Length: 344
Image 1: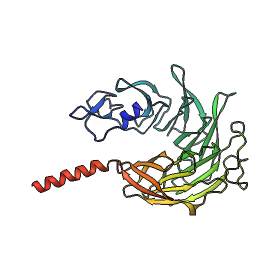
Image 2: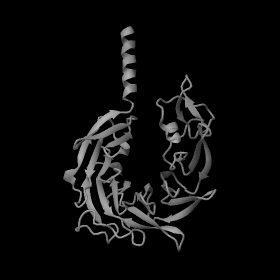
Image 3: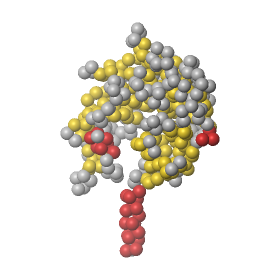
Image 4: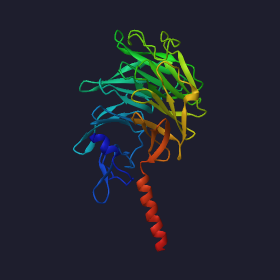
């Protein structure tokens, strides 16, 4: 998609043209390296991005430049142009998720609030009653986009749905963690929620909401009841902070990355409760990863502190670390350095 290609299509980090907000940075030969979404008003240097999300067709991106604002930029004529600014939050925005079908934007912030934004020419916020007293850390729409989950520093997750009579989003808290919840992921059924915490655990909960979801199926067998929202299905100990997680397209695997430079893969088999013994853990060759993405049922791309996205693939029954996406560039640089040393 055009916006994705423009944002992630090149390597390197040249200095952008000062004063050009949204302008492209290019090599000397004119080829595109990356697009600058926003420059600092004083220094004219690119601002750090705390979170971002793309719309369904990749033509627009919502991002926060590490402050309380969310900018919506449109990719047109080969460049990004800011078309809207969402400024309802009081403190730093920590997470953005853009629902592809309803075209709603979900934001949450360190101000302990979350908003759902609808666009009718102008983006307007709808209040979310989170009922938390610590920062919101991460937010994610369910697959059917009728619910969403917001993780928080209150050691809980707020599962939210829309209440039409009051015209706001209400929440039910899922508790049981011992520390800040850093990430969440929805099962494709929309009635199972996974959450990872800095207490070193991954937990699966029932997340069926009466009046929103249809009658839940017995995904994990008759011993797991979905009558009570927020009932714990299983708890997996990781002994490290859980930074990110995602279900595979079929939801048969839950992948999660931890602060001890490991990737973990939990099989989620129909009719059986997931167990800690079934987890496959892969020690990473580099620094810890912060985000991961399933690009296929058997392929995950993860990126983090070593600034080099890594591919993890399933070979037979085992998950293994594969190539690093910048490996070819590293080999070229090493060859150039070696040649230079020999010439000296």
